[in-house]
Image (cartoon, rainbow, N blue to C red; front, side, top):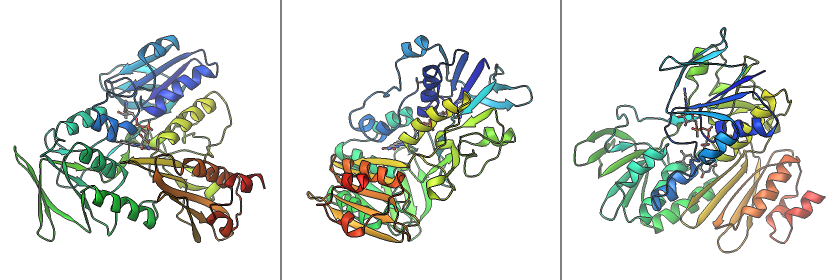
Amino acid sequence: MTDFVIVGAGECGARAAFALRDRGFDGTITLIGSETHLPYERPPLSKDALVAGAGPKLVAEAERYGEAGIALVCGRTVASIDRAGRRVVLSDGAAFPYDRLLLATGARPRALPGAPFSAGRIRALRSHDDAVAIRGHLSRGSHVAILGGGFIGLELAASARRLGATVTLLEGLPRILTRGVPVEIAGRVAERHAAEGVEILCGATVAAVEETPGEVRVRLSDGRVVPASLLVVGIGAIPNAELAAAAGLAVDNGIAVDGHLRTSDPDIFAAGDCTSYPLPLYGGRRVRLESWRNAQEQGILAAANMLGGDEPASAVPWFWSDQYDLTLQIAGLADDAAQTVRRDMGEGAFILFHLAADGRLIAASGIGPGNAVARDIRLAEMLIAAGVRANPADLASPDTKLKKLLAA
Ligand SMILES: Cc1cc2nc3c(=O)[nH]c(=O)nc-3n(C[C@H](O)[C@H](O)[C@H](O)COP(=O)(O)OP(=O)(O)OC[C@H]3O[C@@H](n4cnc5c(N)ncnc54)[C@H](O)[C@@H]3O)c2cc1C
């Protein structure tokens, strides 16, 4: 085994490359990415990159790739995988041979039908270049319309308000944060945005979008028109699975891998946002996570398994979002909860514990200022991983230390 190739130089691909070396692999590692920047972290894009104009937060400085002997190929795209010839072919015709291949191609923003993204006033927020372009439109006196009340849209709304822009957020469903976020937490987030002056219009369906050199106008199906300097569309992401599909690999809401991140070809692995995998903690249900920690952990895990390891992808899903001084954290998947109990923690912070019908703790969602919920969510994550059946009254009482439940 001498040549390892990684397609996708994001969080996941870069972590995998370093993990291969950390685990003693001494063959060639080629990390290929379409973006011209060195691999960087995306979470700051909706936060510091907008508010402070921060440059890309690199996964590692340029020298570290050289020191680790990682050949980083930036600004070039893999166009196909030649499985029979065991090589990837780039859009410029170059080819790289592989013994083992990792696909870490991430996801791309979903466009609104009839309103493609433009270099002007209809934008998405996925890359550092997107953040720079959006920031150029955010100032006192500008008006940003955001389509989609998910995490990215809401974080963008908070950052835009901090820069003094007027914000209208349009959500098609009856409330914001419908995907995996309990109604109480979504309500708390909505209240805070309203208090900060964000106009949130739920149940808003877009009939048409018109872009002119001076503005963009969003026409809603009830006849209302929202004129704005910029429209940012945040209606979800599509996994970049086409490369895998064209090579005949199984695809099911992303590149389908087994519990060890192997695709249907034993020499090709996939990890991060582009991947769906079975999660044993939730009965083997196939999930695709879009989260920073998942991208990191799966990159490291894929590296171990590419080297012949047998490590299962079994981590409890975890996600955080920062909006104003509020931090929201979710551990686990709450969809199948039979019961939810609330623990109030002071200063308006609270955690919801979600229990399965058999009493097992399967998820915990919390919100509060700063780090108010971080410690207990971390402990809840351990309780979830351990499959603990907890007494709802204990969970609800702030006097019960979660550490004690874990020890018990
Ligand atoms: C604005 C924003 C804010 C976020 N905030 C949070 C947060 O607060 N908390 C959290 O947990 N998560 C957050 N996330 C999610 C998190 O950043 C992602 O889950 C993570 O970046 C996924 O990493 P990845 O490496 O799997 O994919 P990506 O980061 O998407 O990287 C994939 C890379 O592969 C490249 N690529 C794709 N196809 C090819 C090809 N054919 N050839 C070469 N290169 C290719 C892409 O250009 C891209 O650079 C946020 C994401 C965004 C966009």
